[in-house]
Length: 87
Image 1 (cartoon, helix red, strand yellow):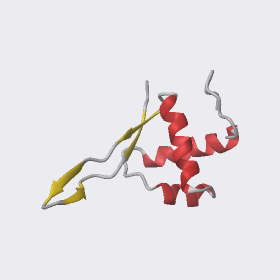
Image 2 (cartoon, helix red, strand yellow):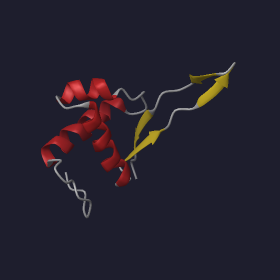
Image 3 (cartoon, one colour):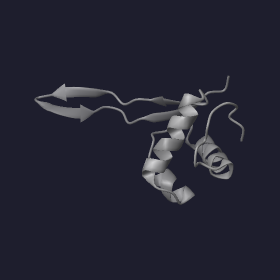
Image 4 (cartoon, one colour):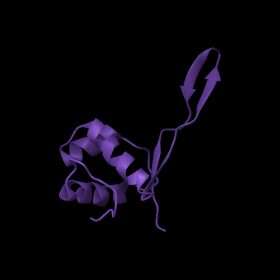
């Protein structure tokens, strides 16, 4: 997988390619970094790092969750969702 001028740092091409293929199954779904991490045998922070790289390359979009305040407590209305950018 070639990302042009983007530096992958210590992330290998094979690992990023496997991650990209795995994300095809998560398009439009809620993000569960722990589940993705288990599937790829890496840690959840590594998954977030991979997502940051792909988001920075405009290949992936993360829809951030929304919150609301109800009687003094914060409630999560929606979890993060992942979307591949097609063009």
